[in-house]
Amino acid sequence: MTDSPVAADAATPVLPTTLEGFLASVERRAFRFAELGLRHRDDALDAVQDAMIKMLGYRDRPPSEWTPLFWTVLRSRIIDVQRRRTFRLSWLSDARAPDGEEIDWADAGPDPARNHDGREAWGRLAKALRQLPRRQREAFSLRVLEESDVETTARIMGCGEGSVKTHLFRAREALQKHLEEFR
Image (cartoon, rainbow, N blue to C red; front, side, top):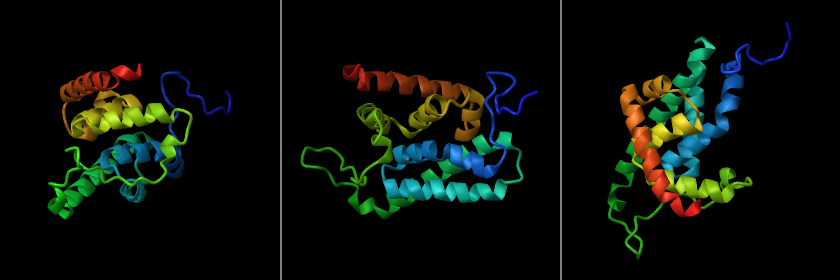
């Protein structure tokens, strides 16, 4: 018997044993997920922080429940911020750029996700993901980027497994079209 944190089954991921360890392991991915949904750095940081604080109330839950619970809490927080923003900015709904495109109100400040070597690839993927409908973006992010299984993704999104598969299929189709010239 070794003290190594490697799981007995290579297909079974090793779960952090403390909530703090779990939150540290999910922090960057959660920020990217929130930023894709909110398109604003500060709102994304706030949403992730709020979700992490809410998770402190679930400290006594088993570690196996933390992942779906955290993503459900974060997703709900993102939706709340989007709804509030829609109400708050409703008077700007007809604002358009001179070329007719909808104005992107995202912060133009530096983005940590774009500071790594794959900056261009991430930028194109993020742009393509933003163009997807919310449910397709969530299904793709949770299944592909977060590597959640279909059952967990369905629980997080509050829908059936068949819906997750449909949203994921449509998201992949749309992303393939958007990223065709990048290949």
